[in-house]
Length: 363
Ligand SMILES: NC(=O)c1ccc[n+]([C@@H]2O[C@H](COP(=O)([O-])OP(=O)(O)OC[C@H]3O[C@@H](n4cnc5c(N)ncnc54)[C@H](O)[C@@H]3O)[C@@H](O)[C@H]2O)c1
Ligand SMILES: O=C(O)C(=O)C[C@]1(C(=O)O)C=C[C@@H](O)C=C1
Image 1 (cartoon, rainbow, N blue to C red):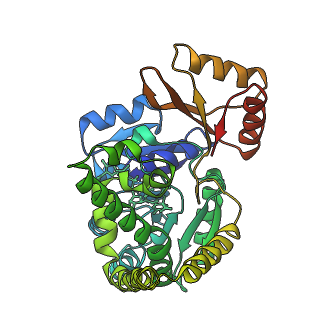
Image 2 (cartoon, rainbow, N blue to C red; image 1 turned 180 degrees about the vertical axis):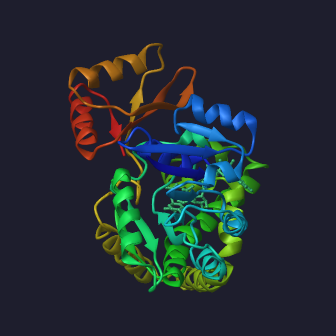
């Protein structure tokens, strides 16, 4: 039996558990720090067994996944180094920063165990095991940061196991990872939070700010709802990279100030053109990379049973709907439903079908 131990059974740890559990010859053990969490992990079926003992979870494990916030990773590596781990055990993590944990693992005495850093480039603004999903990593990139001296058979073994996530494995150097992910993930989270807090301030004296906040604001700020502890740890850990990026960001904002002060419409137009061209060339909307789900919005009349009606219509056309959410519902005013799909094809067919039967569909 291959034993996989997961520490930190939340969004990412729970999703990995779902990918591995039930696969031939695999048993998944989750480590819980609270009894109430232990019961929840079993109830949600993300692991086969739960233990509150770090030793019991780790000893005898063939793979150990550290899925706790970045600020706790080093203490876990240290604690594992005190245990009698199975020879050949592969320890990996899923932290959003890689340089510090790699440096820590290099120094740790892990005996016959091997550390290989990892980072699935998929996630969500939701957190906790309640948000775990079997499909989270499908088609996303999964970064591994092996050292030059990491024996190839260990890398192959971890890569083989990760095939159950259906993610694409890429190897990146830890420092290079932190620079790139700083720009494409950490900086956007800072910008989203700063923007939401700016508008939150304005809305305290005028409720129209919240009322009128529409697609543009919601698109750019979804990630501002991400877990505060997870993101505190990421930003503090990657502060050197982020301080450099924030200075460049500041200079980018200064450029916009100059354009507006000088009424330089041409420069504004060029900035939008260049950004649009680059964005349109990003790899096709890959689940987990840009959107973790395929979504559209439809205007619906405010009357009972509308969700059932839409779901039945899609079901009759064999279109697989993964989620429906009412995102605006006020008396006497048409509401908006958000429809989520796991595949681009389902989204495309839903848009066509709903359009045919008269719904206004938006993206
Ligand atoms: N959220 C994302 O989109 C995303 C994506 C990729 C990687 N990551 C990384 O994955 C890791 C987990 O993030 P998540 O989004 O799954 O968070 P989460 O809050 O959903 O899960 C974290 C888990 O760790 C446990 N935990 C929290 N603090 C702990 C501590 N001090 N000691 C031990 N356990 C603790 C929690 O009980 C929870 O089970 C982080 O390192 C994060 O950087 C997150
Ligand atoms: O989709 C989201 O909500 C995410 O924030 C996912 C996201 C990202 O920024 O792309 C967040 C953190 C990770 O470490 C990897 C992926």
